[in-house]
Length: 384
Ligand SMILES: Cc1ncc(COP(=O)(O)O)c(C=O)c1O
Image (cartoon, rainbow, N blue to C red; front, side, top):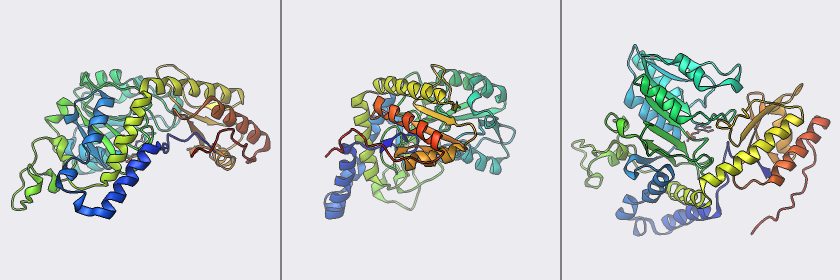
């Protein structure tokens, strides 16, 4: 197959698969004789460390959570924007970005304002966001890269917009971390969250949550568990003495520690390839894909503008349902996602020029046939 679907699930490097398997096997065979207290205490250290290095952020400001959604919910319930304030997001966002704020708003009476983008997804911009932000905006909560079209916001400009209005800036980087070079050393961003299983090529069950210095003073995670305590292993249920760092408290209980171990390994792998190199590669292949689709008569919803484009390319085909085309492509060995009447393709560092050429050849054949075609045999070896 030709895998152009990292925006849905990234492929895991063998090293990360083995790390995950080794963890499960050791735990299964040896229980506490292997996974003893010190091992459990340090189980997520490697993931935090490598994630912090990837973000150029202090490790004390990084937690490993179970999903992006969990981290977003913890932050939303912690900030609880009050009545009279608003939270700004986009009507076309990945749902877990606005939903937690909508749920909190039900409780507090705050408003969630959505930038209208669903009618013209290709026209999303900083200006469109700025139009709905005002003095009552408490939070701007957006994805750095939109899952639907791959549109990349300029983080610095959004951070400035938030700062000018005294708003928190909470970023979901699930569609960018690992594919777009990030540097949080200037401390402009209040929170950056990321699922592990896309561009970081990690597993389900482990995500990254970075908390900026300003938010450290305000964050007070609402979920608590035995690990929220200052001295978790004393197991003193008679009183709740919280750990001083709210970042530590985002990790409030046990989790699929093996997922954290595998995530550390996959981030190490991505870092060893080099995110800047990956970004350059993905942008180059994304442009070839974009131009090829235009040549085939597709309406490409993703921007072609440098600075805003990524390796995600979403297209519609005149007279056809893009979701059906996505289905035909999958049956023809080109793995992509159907999204809102469109076909979403995404390229990462393991994709090649030949993958893109094969996808374009297959799309041409599918458009002629109006149905799936026999998968072309890949010239690549199957590997060990
Ligand atoms: C932008 C974005 N955020 C978050 C997620 C998923 O987050 P999680 O599964 O970790 O809650 C996705 C998955 O498609 C996504 O596209």
